[in-house]
Image (cartoon, rainbow, N blue to C red; front, side, top):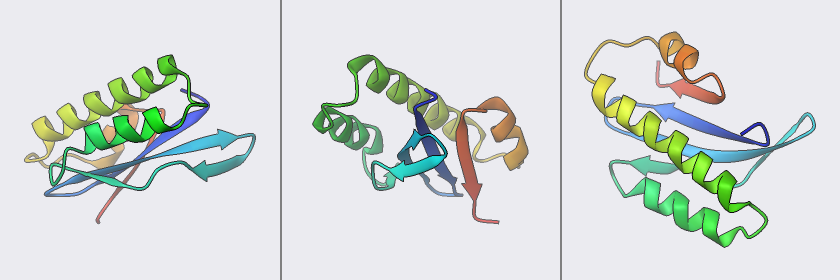
Length: 100
């Protein structure tokens, strides 16, 4: 997923994510932020990816699988005092920001 970069806002009560495209050194936003669990953010991302016919199906699957993995990790770890550096080390191809 070198061409695309998932960005996550790691919050206490929600996890927000958006997708950017990397073109050379430039980064262009592709989607807005989707908030989990406030809405079915995974499904919203899937619908948004389907609208973008220039994104290959295999790339969409990879993006959605990575998003699923991080949502599951957030659900497991969010009640614990986890450090942002731990998250960044586990998911090196994504960008993470927290509220602190």
